[in-house]
Length: 366
Image (cartoon, one colour):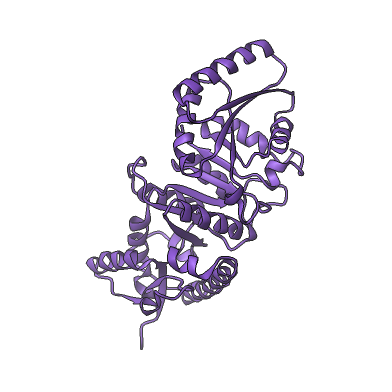
């Protein structure tokens, strides 16, 4: 009886060849498919297929290659990572991510993780029993994922000039696993310049503004993350002129601003430092803000800094009002301000806030 094959993952050709070598070194036979279609603009990557009875042994090899290994996070690779789940949020993030990658002269990598099949959670034992129903379910999931991915690419490429798309030569990674764990693991071994993803995904709860996967990636990866709301403009990058950085006059703010300036340098944007005084020590805050302005202007004379102070009790409304009145394109925060991020995206905050509906959020580590 002929051995049944399943798709282990869909990867760029170079990574597919590496995985094949790793699998063969473990005595696992594999087959590469779609290699002959790499020039097609709708190419969905090279499929690595293995016998179903080898799946249990093959998946750990795949996981080790794509992540779950510590790596130096200061050495970034020249690509922009865009995690997708085929939702409208993902489509918006992919459009913005493509423009950013093009601006940075980097590759764009679309990354999708399908739900992990149940047999992968069964503990290893001396006796291996193959459940045909589980593999049938995996096969159905694989086909459904391939169809959704092709439909997603069709929507994406219909909104991007064909020649730009062909020149950019995006890469795709599709595998099984838990999305947030896989994204974090992959960036540990392959740190990108930037992660661009939707503020939330298709499985977010109705009242959530920040999806659980996005939140997990923001707080657990060392890579800057740009979270894109669904209603952000498709050509957002063309009008990207101002970034507001929320400061609390802490020592780490100067380190954070230095990193922000380096990150923003290719985009020729203006950085505005904003502090919201919520009712106490207004005079002290004004003095500290002036000192901060002088120090920044002295250190970065060509950066064109602007520092602003707002007196308002409600933090979220103050920031939102500032964004509207000053045509701010990005709200920048560090993970050090975790409480502030949580408060801004709390379900109890007014649903019509601009920062939730149109303004991207840039989160980076100090």
